[in-house]
Length: 486
Image (cartoon, rainbow, N blue to C red; front, side, top):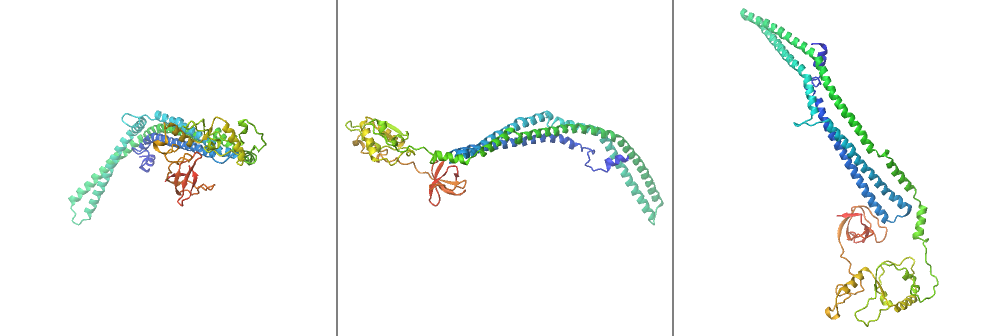
C-alpha cells in the first residue's frame, strides 16, 4: 500500500468524510436546508406579529392620551406639543404596520416560493434532492467500498495466519525444552510451523495484492466523491446566498432610520415642541380666562315699554338650555294667570350665570320685570329635565281629582313635594384597586398610591371622573382611568 494511502485512510480519524457512509452528513445538510427555511419563516412571522402588536399598542396609547389631553387643563402651544407625542405614536404605528406587511407580504412569501422551487417532496416521503444526493454518493463509493471489503477479508486472513504461525512456533520451542522429548512429536511440530509459515506467506501476498488494487481505485474514488460533493456544495451555496440576500431585505424593512417618513415624523415633533411659547400661552389664558376678558360694565339705561328692553342683563344672559312651556293652565278655568314671581320659583337654571351677569341687581328691577310679565298673555316657565318628566307624567294622567286617591298629583311617588328634586339613583359600591399614584389637586379629590384599595360609589361622569370612598371614610373624586376592579 502506498504511503499516500496510508496517510489518508489509515492514520485519519474514523470520522473522516472518506470513510464508508460518512457522506451522510452532506446528505443531511440538504434536509437541514429545508428545515432552516421553515425556521426562518417562523422567525419572520413572529417578528411580524411583534410589529403588529407594537403598532396597535402605539395607536391605543396615542388615542387614549389624546383624549386625556383634550379633556385635561393643559392649553395653548404646550397642549399642541404634548398632543404631538400622540401624533408621533400614530405615525410610527403606521410605519410599523407597513413593516409587518413587508415582512409577511414580501420577505415571507419570497422565502416560501424559493423553498418550494428548491425542495421537491416525494410521494414516499422526504425530498427528491436528498435522494439524489444519497444515490450520487452511494454510486461513487460503491466500487471502492467493495474492494475495501475484500481487502479487510485478506487482512483478517493474514492476521489469523500470523497468529497460527506464532502459536505453532511457541509449541515447538516448548517441546524442545522438555526432557522427555519425543522425536516424532517434535517432527510434527516442526512440520506444523513450516506449514503455518507457508500460509502466512500466501495470505500476506493476497493481502498486499488486495491493497494494491484498492490503491488503484482510490484516486478514482476520490474524484467521483469530489464531483458529487461539489454538486451539493453548489446547491448549498445557492441557499446561503439567497438567505443573505433575503436577510438584507429584511434589514431594509426593519431599519426605519433610513425611511424619510420616519425622519420627517421626528423633525415635525421637534419643531412642534420647540414652538412651545410660554409667553403666548400666558397671554392666551389672560385673554380667555383672566383680566383680559371683555366685560359688559353697568351703564345707564332709559326705561322703555318694550319688553325686550326692560329685561335685565341677567335675563338676557341666561342660557337657552332647558324646556320652555307656553300657556300652561290649570283644570279650573277661573284660575288667574300666575304672577311672574310664582313662575320664577319654578325656574331651575341648568348652568350658573355667565361671567357677564351681575348677581347684585336690585329687587326693583325684579319687580319691574314682574309687572311687565303680568301684562303678557304667555307664561314662560323654564324647567330642567327632571321637572319636565314630572310635568309630562301629569299630562298623561286622565281626569284626576283630589277625591280619587288622596295623593299629591305633583309627586311621582304619590307623597312628595312637587318642588323637590327627584330621588337620586341608588349608590353603587364596587371594590377597586388604584393603577397609578394620584395626588388630589382640589379639596373634593382623593389622594392615593398605586395598589391602594378603595370603593367606587359613583359612575363616571362626562368629564372622566368617578366618585369613591377610601378606607378611612374619606369620599371624593378621582380620574376614571386610574383604577381597575379588585
